[in-house]
Image (cartoon, rainbow, N blue to C red; front, side):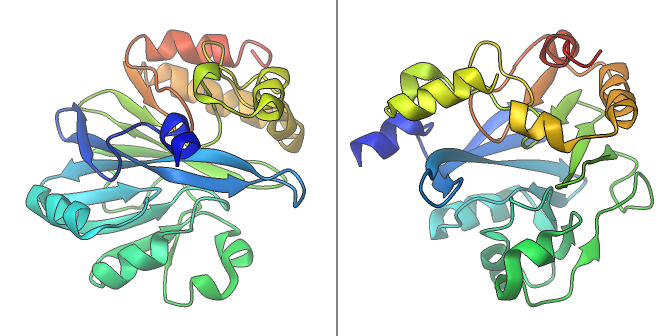
Length: 246
């Protein structure tokens, strides 16, 4: 329990305002990695209000208290699985809010198996979504997975999942993970796309175009799923994090 508390960002399962109409929720850790080297990853959800509707990105654990707090903000209308490894709690949110549409990035069904056995929409293009006026959508395609990133225009908030990871060393109790995050270029303050993930994006021109598109949006802040977020100078952080590519 002590390790769990250190690795995460308390208070957990609680809405935290980031900007006008934008909140995050920090969740518990989830184990990820090869069978003999599974490591704890802190989780984070983003909630964006569009009119009276809510955009739920990479949902975390749903507690009764969190459900009530979310309902106090508006109506959950879209539940988003942004890449193939961010799906674990989607079914819980679908059960709690059956009227919300679930949008899945490519290959989530393949990864999730029977855990997601209900109708979902495809999240595989830049436009044609009901949130287009308020949020820009950008699929970033790789050979292992496609990650879909979003930009909330009004608050200039960029939401990514694993394209940038930024683990804080003082929150890592495992010497192995501390070493791996540093070697993998995913350690604060120099978080970036992890080295193993870089190798899976073989079309570097396509990846470069996506990064330049995000820089062109001129985000003020960047919300990450794992590690410390960037609350200012978002465009500069993108240039730094992808210097190896640009």
